[in-house]
Image 1 (cartoon, protein in one colour):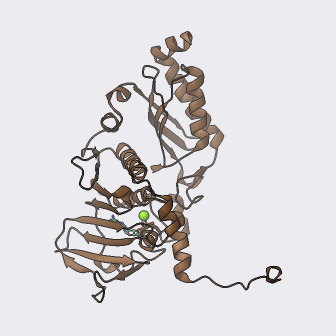
Image 2 (cartoon, helix red, strand yellow; image 1 turned 120 degrees about the vertical axis):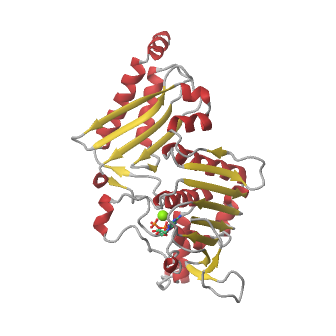
Image 3 (cartoon, helix red, strand yellow; image 1 turned 90 degrees about the horizontal axis):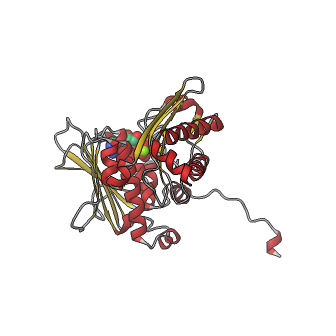
Length: 355
Ligand code: ADP
Ligand code: MG
């Protein structure tokens, strides 16, 4: 039967390859947002506003006041593997920017209708360009592809509309716009805490108020208070540790026993990237369970910096997971530091004795 015969091997069409790759990097609106936020931060923005319609599926807009994009780069900016941040492979080990692969805008342009309006400080006007599948497209059918001069503030506005319009299976898997909005809010608020000083806002278009509104020059603790409430903020104590031999350091804010949380909250940044790291999370959670009463879950904001050479950020297309050397040593140092802190806050001592 025909089942016994191999089908011929063919090279996939470029557009199919790109759409599959894009769907791995951008798997929901909050991933797109993370990439866009990182681009705004890379561009030196001090003010970032996010506007969302329908959980980001209908529309996701980010406006920043960063350095903008050079007009002559607009035709290139959404092609795959175009970046202003990395030149040679070796740069990866010392890279200071979030981005380096030149895949985010390309990916978004493959799975949405994307427009970019950008103005450099020394330009007379802004330029607006529309993209599909990595390339410039006209704003209206039959029009010109050329970026159009227009009025605008310094910085960049990116608008992604109809996310996953061309990936029906993905689109139908993301029906719950409330859930998607919550994820967007979570990414935005965590970056706002870690990048305290940069003003962030996040709102649903048409809603009476903004859901996130941090101020320029604010501190992390002020932003935590605004986002998680005064009760949590006032229970936090700071930790700090550094280790020259293994080339890592961390600082953070952790909940002490004085406030019992019922759900754990982890804000983990490794080399300024918001990441998940199950071994750290597990180890810290089990520490809290052993030291504090049963119902107590940790609030942890950890800013971990590891020598870039020891970190691999390329293990997952969304960069959500990272691997690093000396993992056991680093996890143990974190647990030890938190443990000492919990024991030294008198509150936790008395509670742990009672329990
Ligand atoms: P990467 O961040 O890996 O370089 P991206 O696809 O995210 O790749 O972005 C491509 C390029 O577009 C960036 O290298 C940068 O030069 C430019 N860019 C993207 N977003 C912005 C922004 N908000 N402000 C200024 N430049 C931007
Ligand atoms: Mg980027």
